[in-house]
Image 1 (cartoon, rainbow, N blue to C red):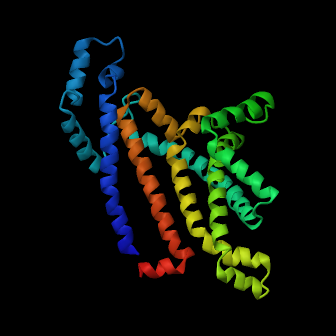
Image 2: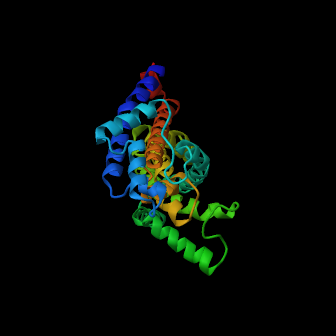
Image 3: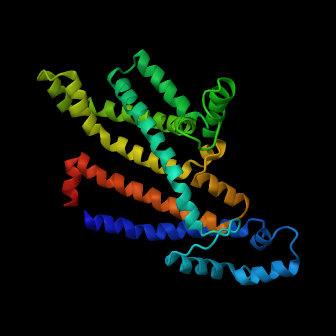
Length: 308
């Protein structure tokens, strides 16, 4: 098990290098001058040229990237062009807000998706199965920003029950959490139903029923446990995606998280903030996937024996 974990951590290094190089390339070749951004539009050209020289922006692209990698290895990702603060300090101050949103979103998704998927599988081709699959299809198809705007119009503008944005108390968590959770719940529902349908047709399920085992025990103990592996995979991927992909939701609801900070940094061509945010989210996503792989061993003893 420990060798597997170390191997996965080592494989993370080329992934981070590839991600950082891609983002650094995009940010370098997009229009805009960071020195001009820092000094302001009215700054004299001589001052801008001097700052570009001090920041090393006149160096070749590959030299700038290697300098960034060298500094990043020792934990120095630079300072934000817009605020002047250490970029990782800003990320860590905002990440708890993103984490709260992602955790609530995945809880909503799991609480809706898994029970609905089980019911749909055990009552295949019934009305509840058809309705749940239509709802799952709608949930997968709806754009996140559209759903967020519709919820704001309904519950904030018309009914005035919930705030439309910002972070002010528990009520402000409801709409963004639901917005994130609906799409994930649809995917989890479809995967749970598909996995359960495959399992409940196995011979050992028919044997358990032939022995007179109660249907609830057959479904919950025999079928569900064996159907959980692909479901856990989807839940883990969805949680990692919510951590890194809550950009639109945070922008719609003016949520002070990493996603919104990254969008603002892209608009202002704040390269250090964008790079640090992307790398941080890539590491977070990889850690979530590693935790899911380790969780397999506790769900399925056969996988644990492979690690041994």
